[in-house]
Image 1: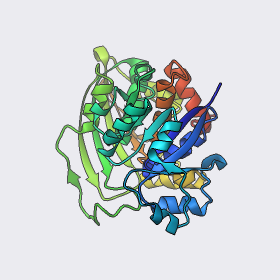
Image 2: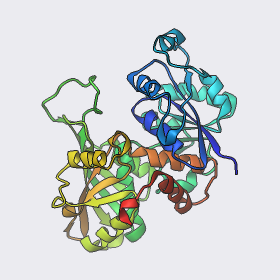
Image 3: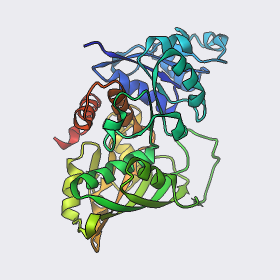
Length: 351
């Protein structure tokens, strides 16, 4: 079977990781990446002889408005234009800045190329608002998918996990949100917490993906960069009680949920980031979300817990799932997510 040919538009925080994720898939081929300027990420790639994950050579294409002379000044080789790249692929992973992906869609439609957009785009850009575990089958054969945001992606993993095990009726969340990615300066230097208006979009997005669940939430911005923390209160259907033991068993069986404890040394978001670096993970990434066993508590018939969201990398597996769905590589969520997990080595710590 021929490998699915994939391109990545935008080689930023998410695009770098999407390119690596595709390069790690044994049944996919990374045809190339596209960007506007010789950013530090691209300069670093050039210093590594344009070699990325799994020893794959990354060919660079330039989007409209790029100045090829700027790339030549940094001795960065260019393989062609963005349109050249689009003509060579089966599907584009669009991680361009918010709003740019919608403009790129015009080219995708013209060339008959499928595309998967990241959370920064409006839902209207896609045929399906997609999550690999919660609604994989809805993405089968669709031309345009849009991923949920990092927080929503991790949140849905846990809610979907409990929903399939027990049936979930209602969810209430509080998001303690990192203010910017590591290395970002545009948010300024802060020493304050900032409230968002309720309900948070993550709760609204969860209901879009899982319309049978009632959800609401509050979001607080915090002056940190390594990960978000979400507290989740879940009510089962028909007043059914979810015990701590039953919830823990379900979470431990989920490949993309890493159950941790404070006594092990996982004191917070920074502990998980440091552990990923100690594991030797590229860029300190972790595809799994962290869930503290110590945080799981019963309150009446409800269950409450806390999770950590590694915002730079958490959406990568679900995006790869999206490729599998849109190209009908696997026809069920079980098969599709299992293939993605295999190549990304997700869940290996559970063995």
